[in-house]
Length: 107
Image 1: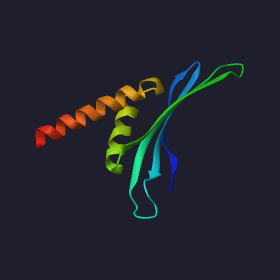
Image 2: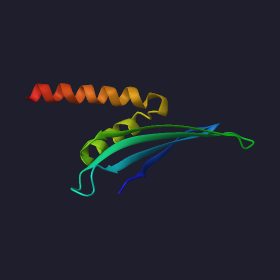
Image 3: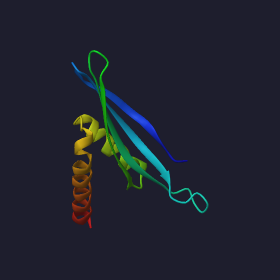
Image 4: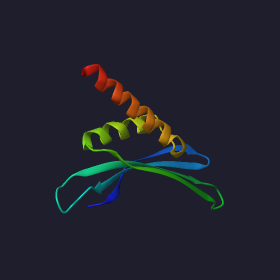
């Protein structure tokens, strides 16, 4: 099953009304041979202005995580920091570097 699931929506501002939506993206790697899945992240920022104007900004990075626990840990971290779409790539890169450093220390 491939798809995106809204994990959490937070409101950051009132004027304009700004929402940040955090999604977990699930993709099957090979459904014919195994049930292996990989996970990505999507952040969507929606600004709604008085008078009816609306701006939507979105960033998505697929296939970053291969364990559901890892994607949950990551999404909770970016929600806590209220990460916006424009910073998603930078935050993912930093997380990967941190994970590699932790793995080296424990090896």
